[in-house]
Image (tube, rainbow, N blue to C red; front, side, top):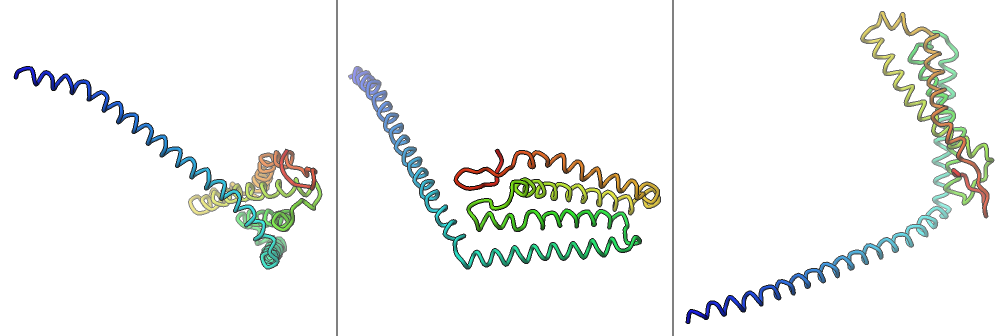
Amino acid sequence: HFEYPFYFLFYLSILFPITAFELEQNTIQNETEFNSRINFSFHDIAEILNQSSEPEAETFLKSLTVRIVLIIIYSVVFFAILLGNALLIGALSSNRVTLTPTNIFVLNLAFADLGVAIFCVYQNLSLYLLSEWIFSDLLCRMYHFVHAISYTASVCIHVAIALERYLALVRPFWARVFLTRTRLRTVIITVWLLSALACLPRFLIYKTITSHFNICEYS
């Protein structure tokens, strides 16, 4: 009877590796099937989204109601920018007393907004309503250049306003001596020059490309 435990251990040593091997194979097979199902489902979802989103977007923009609403909204934005900034420029430029350092910076912000109104608003609207670029090559370049330089200069001017306000509140005597009109002009010219240099690549790389129809993009 002492040999029975040895027989039991012998059979166990044979069956255990076989069972473990079968379990490992089943696990690998199940993981492979699971991953293939996930990949298959994700691939199907991506194809469905790509096939359904573009026609729906095109159909949405071709709707007459949507086009009218877009034209009204863009027109309101255009005339609001044009009228508001023109009034601001006229009010600040008419009286030299109102040209404080802060108002000089605000005046330049108004010029940046006017550039966006003239070169960007209706040009951007045409991208939604038309399938091709109907403007000239120069306007294609100016659209991207002015759009970039306006917010670049605006950010720099806001930084300059913050520094000017800090000096006026914390060190008012030193601000009166340092913030002269000549220095303010130098700061403003520097801001516009640096902004123009930073955005100049957009003016150079964007152009009107003619294939079956005209498009405005970089090349």
